[in-house]
Length: 263
Image (cartoon, rainbow, N blue to C red; front, side, top):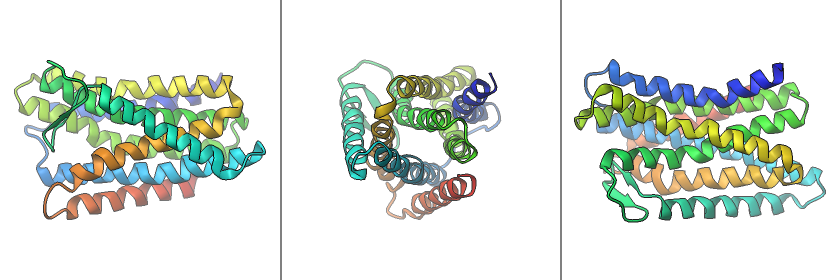
């Protein structure tokens, strides 16, 4: 029961931080300026890059070797599958990149607000999977302190970057004329996908133990696809991209420190 509570708390924490960020719509009269938004996007990119390496790819290599596989096989194969998975979602699900002003996915008559929420939802899918898989790895190791600390490091890092992400959904929607409550709910909904996909990842890992190295690398590939395809371009949209760059450096540093210190 104690392990179940820890697992539930770990899966729920990133979504809770998204909810708290979305709640800023009740506290802040306007919306973040372009420089602040670019900094937030860069921070999220830095967190996800560091998490992909320390929390996902390195454990994938270690797990693969423990199963008698070449270290690169599961890591490389899972990574490629994760990239293809996000590529498919990116082309199928209609969504809007607000800062770039670009619509992607299949043609749709959905409102810009709905498309914005879908864009953030796509972003959150690999994050939820990553957190779920790290906690699943901790469960497989009997909730050993190093594995559990590493899972919590990832949950904390993802949660920290989810706070401004939740605000980045609700505040612009309210600025475009949506009521505060509806804008708040839209921000919350964008984060609900994380515990859902996290739980699905835990169940897959529990039922398919030999594919854990592939699943870890899969989540890494999916996260890095989001970083390269969405976060970095939007963080550097301005000719003077120092805010996005420094945000990415800060996010990478925070996630690296958390992972090394707690893991």
